[in-house]
Image 1 (cartoon, helix red, strand yellow):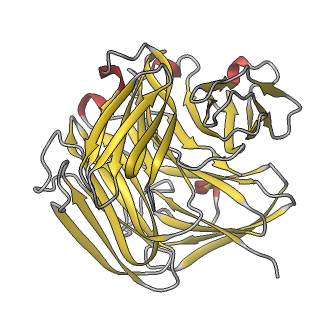
Image 2 (cartoon, helix red, strand yellow):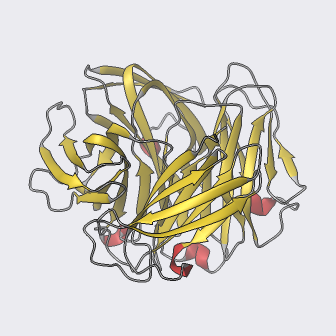
Length: 439
């Protein structure tokens, strides 16, 4: 009997208009549309099944696809005939290992996140906001068990292990999704970065969206929740006035004890923090005078389990979030990369997590072109900007595989931006970031 591999996605406002379903996004703007990419990271041709569920748990559409090794299935959801406007949850099953990412966007904002390989009964959300310097958030949870489940969101203030706000969605149907908006919650104070925890009576997956208002109204961020923490995390790409980009690092203590945390940056700078249980610490990278301008990476270590996210933005309101990496391998997959594909171009940023220097080689689906790095020291990173590579044609959309040639563990992120003139200076957020997938 063949083993089947499962992935889960929450599609946020996926079609030309938003239907009246209970999990409607609170992100302003719209109408939003979604797309997703599924990369075959196995050893043989994959048969991929995709199932679409609404808020009642009803499966409204299914499709079957054949995907060759290292190739990618790209689906633009509004193009699916017979699927009405609304929000959906997706279950992807395959007879080969696969990796998936999802994008959602309207005319002037967009975000990206990774598919989930499995569910859990608890998820940690490092950053939730109610008017945090003009930013707000919402949290989604998808019930991936086979029976209805109660799902609870608890929100914690910095320095406090007791929640300031809790709410339970009862009897959430199997495979369906619910969400919580943090906007206008009287229990949350402005300009405070809170953290959250999702718990459930069955297996769920969880992700969060952050959106701006006022002068940052186009900025939209999405990131996956964490089902568990670790004592070491890596951030492959941090920015301090790097071609106008800046970043912030958020660390949430997911243990029951106060955590002592050290952040070691690739330039040799080290910073220490103490974070109470369930609380989070936000670190604005440009605010650290010890760091030089440019592209950096970081290693986060703690005496108790933590989780890490990174936010990025530039002056044109391009913005995105990716998750820190706690586990790594010598091979990383990128399900969706582009070079001037309808105006979008990608970069890959990979960090050497090993103990000795390594080189890295990246290859691309359907192309003979490969690129190999110089020697990358432990903790340092390597960036591949696709428009700078003559071996990748304009209009390219595909997948990529990065291999560490010295058998050292690596971690990668992928950024994609609408950056060719005249879009590159427009005030909008057509910028997406996601984590490379370990193989």
